[in-house]
Image (tube, rainbow, N blue to C red; front, side, top):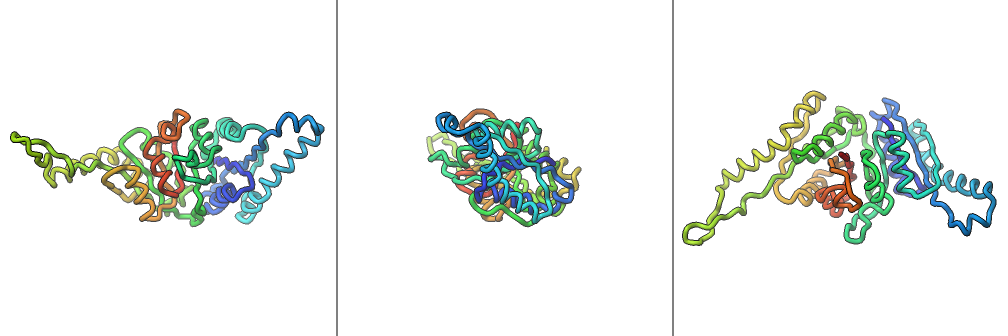
Length: 299
């Protein structure tokens, strides 16, 4: 597995490195870890005041400051990493390296979760989301999980995007602790209980009985998860099937918090520069109200 981790010396990027260093099962299969530091270019006016050699030394020194703590974390886990230093716009350089190297996973530490303020993940992470379809794991403000066996939620809705999320999670199961990982297969069904219809006199009467509502929800749930169950069976994984009722974003976020899930995996159509367009409205809602790490699989 090839993993790219952009580092800048902050607690957020160190958190991302620490997460990888804790993946005991993954480490056993010798993943290819790539650390990337991108230095924003100095203003042209400032650059003209120093020699080319001095400028290169400056960028090299600044990159070393970012690599040093990450290197130390990996060394404790007896892991080595390839190091790449770039100068340019951070988001563009990160996306380009991810695509050029054909990495299996991009991990970014991020801060903030206010969609209204535009700080859902931080400006660089938001921009990277819009520039690449490489699977992206976004760690949040809280410390990343460090136990090998993780509790992982996978949200499905019967679409090809949910199926893509399942396929990725199964293929990269070592990332979550291999066969010891606890998989929660999550689908949110509609709340039909409030459906009403007028009778001949204009009075509002229940359109569905309680039993009918239950049957509809069971059917809706089965349509979403049945197509992916054979994938788990083939991999020898038995997921916990979770049926939630109501607004997907709110209900999934609440479930992640209640069950203390370590990571939530979601599929996304992956287009557009707006957060809701890139991740989808459900993922955007979850990100704005919960701090669970999100692994977005793009299509």
